[in-house]
Image (cartoon, rainbow, N blue to C red; front, side):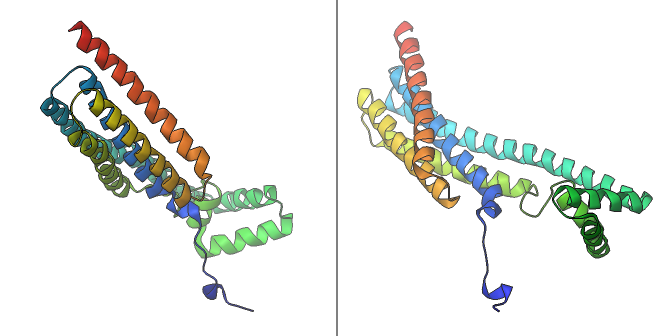
Length: 234
């Protein structure tokens, strides 16, 4: 019989922490920067003004993504730590009740009473807090919050994503050609992003690609309309 070490498995859920932050950062970088560029260009601004607005959006967006991810994921980490501390105290104060609670969880999952009690005995003897964290609180190494990882991932991918429509604007003549060029290029970038993200997570590629491209197109169309309206009125 082959050993477990000879048959290693890597599940896609293990990537969920950094993959979520990476997809969010890159998508936001493309959509927000492209929308900003298209909106400013539609207001009949000069090329220098468009590029300046795009660079400002890139820098501000990357910092905002990093700070936002760090704060939000840190809040999750604080909540997890508080739950673990409370669970640790409950295990010290009333281990018998915690044993019954864990056994009840296993009974609900389909084990008979005797087996559930044996499983609870062995797991609590091995790592009582780990067993309760996993089976009662649903906290595992896969879902544990990592604020620094999320912040750096989002900032880096936002910068990469924002640089793409900015490059398209740089190589396009100002006016309608720039608007069309940035719009088309950004949709292509979003489609690739959706496909890569879906492929990385083993999700349906076509649905993810269409979803990302649709919302990106809607955002750019809206800002282009606002930019043209403001530029005309001014």
